[in-house]
Length: 335
Image (tube, rainbow, N blue to C red; front, side, top):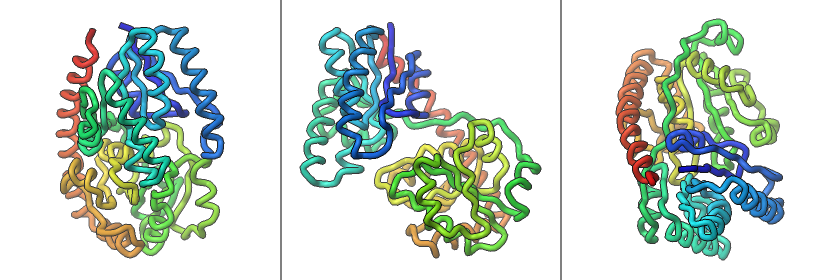
């Protein structure tokens, strides 16, 4: 059985893992990535490039990511013509998360519903999205949470000194979504003495926002770290911060921090609390004062140790459950 995993975008850690789990070849297709005003041209070009790719490779199963819904919709055309099966991974559901209640949202919602019903199967990264899919009659809905392998690196004192002489270091990694509260994180940690915050993320998405901020002296933007340096950095810091107003989002980066056994300050979201329980130290709002209070609380070594242990225990449970999810996914795609 030949399986091809397709993402319309330059990267996708979740798609990487799912492709590996089902033995799929992994393809990212990218044209004019970024600005929304390129979307009509981008999607038209991606439509034809994807059909050409599929007709050339002739997979038996196509595993396509939504959003954008036009990716699995394009793959559905091929599958109907070639007698192949389409599986859609709903990284998120556009009509709920992003577009609100306007005409565009309704059209996107109709397309997402059509694709979810017409596909052979659908996967979702958490139970909230899975329920949304089930409610519209999607076929074979399976929850497969994100997962990150345990960070094998050890604390590197020389690496720490490269960043700061402060006794404590926090990390905050972002992809650049407008609702990620990078500015609030920076202002909050700036008010906490003895803690340095390292903000990591792609310059294409973050540099513009960072340049408009007057970063406190204990806050540094380190850019987009390569994978090896990023893993070493997470193993060497003392805590992590992830503050966002994104609704219904279980940020992949939270799994990365958990894989490094880091105490985590997180904004309170229903899907996050449902998944992590009391393993994270939640802020009651995304205000600067609330974030600063939680970061300041982690200056206490005993509290950091307690939440590091909570995260480690929760990570162990997640790892065990995830093996079962992957077995279910492989069984779902078995010929």
